[in-house]
Amino acid sequence: MKVCEFISNYRNHPVLFIGAGVSLRYLENSYTWDGLLQKISYELKSNPEFYLDIKSSCENEGVYDYTKIATILEEVFNESLHQDRDGKFKNINDEFYAKMGSNINISRLKIYIAELLKPLEIKDTKSDEVAELKKTRKNIASIITTNYDCFIEGIFDFQPLIGNDILLSNPYGSAYKIHGCISDPLKIIITEKDYKKFNEKYELIRAQLLSLFIHNPIIFMGYGIGDENIKSLLKTIFTYVEPNSESANKIRDNFLLVEYEEGSDSLEVGEHDIDLEGFSTIRINKIRTDDYTSIYRALSELTLPISAMDVRKVQDIVKEIYSGGTIKVSITEDLDSLNNSDKIIAIGSSKTITYQYQTSAEMMSNYFKIIDESNSQLLVLINKHKIQTQQYFPIFGFSCICDEILNVSKFKEQQKCKIKFALDSLPPKYQTTKTTIKEITEDDGIPISHKENALLWGIMQGYLSLDEVETYLRTFEEKMTTQYRKLLCGYDIKKYGLSVN
Image 1: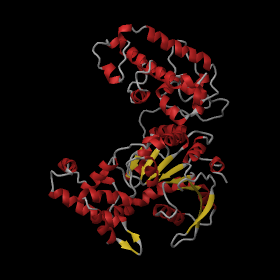
Image 2 (image 1 turned 45 degrees about the horizontal axis):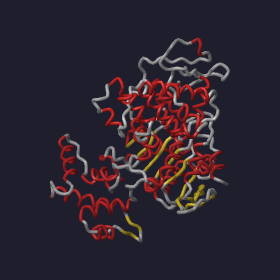
Image 3 (image 1 turned 120 degrees about the vertical axis):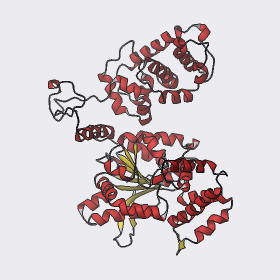
Image 4 (image 1 turned 45 degrees about the vertical axis):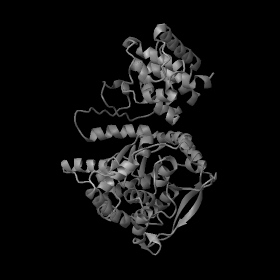
């Protein structure tokens, strides 16, 4: 069966289980467990044999115990930095002592790991594939990852959850960092002691994750078929679920392991048996490929009765209801009978309830998220909004994604007229040729009243890099302002105007 057909059979939102292979695929600065420990060892001693000596002492029948290697390395690393306060790792010592000044005792090794993995530089050759990965997030329920870095939750804009925070979470829109995260080095799990504590406290977290495995399709990425994380997870599941039961068969059918095979463009999903020590053989679905783009497209094109984004919104409201307070809750089939309330849950038939979940203003605020996700389902709602003649609205990019928007030509003309009017109002002496946003905003020769039109001029004339403009707009704090909307529409025309009629 082809992977697109396999995924199209999903009836619930998938969960991604992400391993180190994903970060290795996309990031310039990423490591395997072995590679990370080797890197730290070399930076500490400048001698590759130092790590090999430690590694050789932690081998049993051809299997290396990386928790034991990390334990030995942590002891040596911490003591070396203690003896050399202001040497090569002065900044690590600075942070260590600053934390200790606040009675927070964090291993110097873990502080250094957080520093090593903090940069998130995406490989140039993988930027298009990462763009396709972003589009899947509208259909992804949650993420579970053993990675320490912040790549995957950043791509999905999911809430990272570490340690006991996992127990208090909403299943949708969460990134479960089960081995810790560089955002909180204290909770990184890497040594024998760390794993011992983790296993002692893991039971409740295990139960939380088990509910996801039972109810949602699980896609493993960044792991090999023999990875201990996969085997440990399967053992956990089939400790609680009878191996030959209907629930077990449903779980197996929902599992898909994406295993990397360099250069392969195979999209065929097959079955694979995994021999679990102490358990019966478990059969799961597997695809071996290097064509991740096709997998991401199948996920982004998955059509379900309700989007994962909507589920997240409902869960947020329900959580607010549970917490008590002054929230007003009404359950009704007649929305017209309600007074204005902050939150409403409406239950009834589609004949009596209509739901529009983003206004045109919200669409402009969420412009880049909608573009990243190619969220055509959301953009159909434009047909229900009245776009005023004098309103800034970025139709060019939206129309590239959704071909069901009505009156596109009219909206394009409105947008171009608005931009032309703004440019015509800019005096020639302020029509700058400066090539960075900072140069324009800090130019005292341009009055504040003309700054935004000067920026717009730079965008439309091509003096400003669209990449810089995009970064500026993505991080713009006041996205409901006219300034943001005007510059966004200029960017939108410049970026997408030549690609549409």
